[in-house]
Length: 397
Image 1 (cartoon, rainbow, N blue to C red):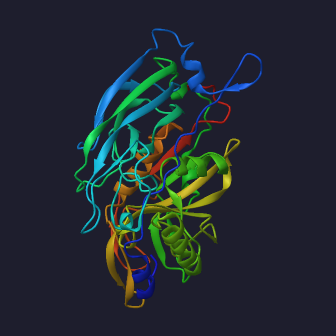
Image 2 (cartoon, rainbow, N blue to C red):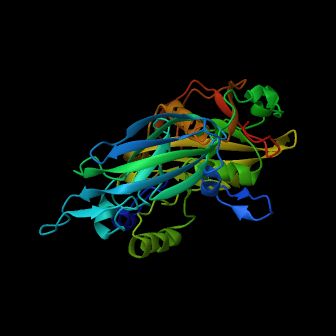
Image 3 (cartoon, rainbow, N blue to C red):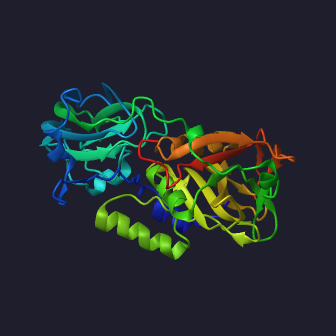
């Protein structure tokens, strides 16, 4: 874990917000070779695909639409109506905003919104009710293709303490529907991850002084761009590599975009004789200095078939602790590290980019140990195996 200078802690406190990669729009090729949007296709959609209108009250966190989306669905969401925001500041007045919400201000930096990269009060959606389901911006209109089956929820981008009134009226139009029973993951040709491969991976990472640290507790099967893309879609962000990067990113996020800064650097740990290839964080605004989900990734020096193996070590920062190496301040991790391994599993699975999840227990599992800073942790010793959907997989699988 990283020792944090108090000046950096002071700079970072209260500046954080969540970042998200929303699902892309999906243009459709027209008969004449030109490109047309999903909305252009709605008029030619089969009657059975239909549309549905939903009233989304602003005083409710999430409204269950009753619509179960399928993987491969193409939909267009359009919204109208206004919601009334609470007065801002001592002498502020209540303001009405449409589905795009109110542009971000500096006051927003100390609030926890479901999606802090979107405006205050903006219309959001999410698929599924899991704690790992990532909200996405709908605004006045959004075209999207569904990557994961699940129930559609809609709600305003507001903190739980915000007293919003009014509602949005949302129309969901199906352009096309995915298969009702998609092909099982077993139908995909996935490379095998064997016990021998898992046993070739060191059970723990080490710090610069050679002290053993966190468990290696998951493996992702897929090539680099797909692996990074899957984590990005799941709401994980790359952390800065140095304290100077952190200062610059914090200034840029706060004063230019008015989005909070989540990418506080991690300490360097090594596996396979080299530092992590990626450090990723999944954090809540404001609390990111003390609390965040985080992980490190290393590319393994061997592959599973024609696919790369990415080895990860994931832990959950839950506060501060004494670094027993030097009596400094360091992050305290949740000692039940299996919870963080399983959070990684859920967050990736929510993206619809995962073909298969499984576990392998190494021949010599790490079940009880201490981090490089001296904190204890425990585990059942299993390694999570995440197979991403191959690039060659047919649409809808």
